[in-house]
Image 1 (spheres, rainbow, N blue to C red):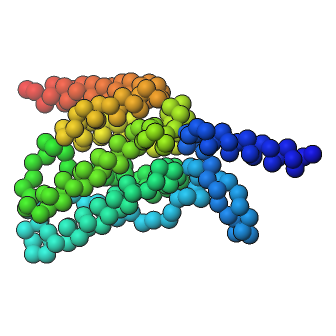
Image 2 (cartoon, rainbow, N blue to C red):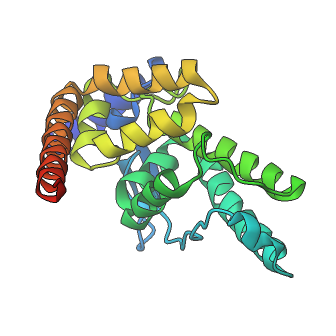
Image 3 (cartoon, helix red, strand yellow):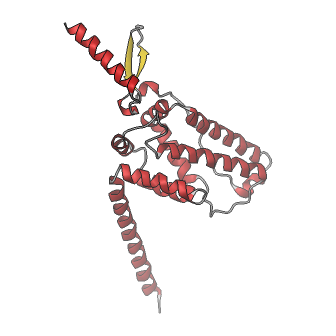
Amino acid sequence: ALPILITFFKSFRHARMAGAVLPLDQRTVPMRNKNGVQKEAPAVHKLWAEPRLWEPYQPPGGSDLLVPGAAASWLAMADRVEADLAWLLRLKANRFWSQVCNDDSLHRWLDSLLETFPRAHESTLLGEEVGASQQLLLHRLFLVFVRLCTYKESATDFFTPEYYGAMIYDKYIIEVPAVLDICVLFGACNPQITSRMVGNIFRCQPQYGEDLVTACTTMSTALDTVARSEEHTSELQSP
């Protein structure tokens, strides 16, 4: 009787999946184990992540690029960074999120890109080719974070909002400093989509709002401390 029940429930589950698209957090993907036995694994799982070395990014140095060979060297590095971003964007939804959720080096790489990529207000004289490469990198990086900041990529690839909110928060995929960097870096070139990205994060995970208040309070206290210290120093130095 037990094998019959197992077969029945498997057939029932597949019938449900055939009739309605399940969110990624409830979906499974068929696979064969090392013994050739077909099983099903979660759609988002370390099985679908690939080991990869991510090319470190260095912002262009302005006058440093005038050194013979410096521009060519920077462009070669930028091409490798762009290739990594393009590879990430080409991944199917379940493999993209499997990579994001199970690759700590990817987290560090994306955080580094957010932190070090030149802001719109940082004017640096760049050659035409270097400037075009920078714009391409910014566009690719923007698309990666658009993907990270939404729970519904398409009608067939999506998470439940509750699962998405818990996932990005509990796995530290997006943290408050990254949210601030997203606003500064992308807000200048695409304010409407950036606003929707950040709004989606806060709607799906209200804890970010509390963390932001805490971060702002900490920064305000630190600035007050510096201001008082400067005032005290000025008083000591005055005749």
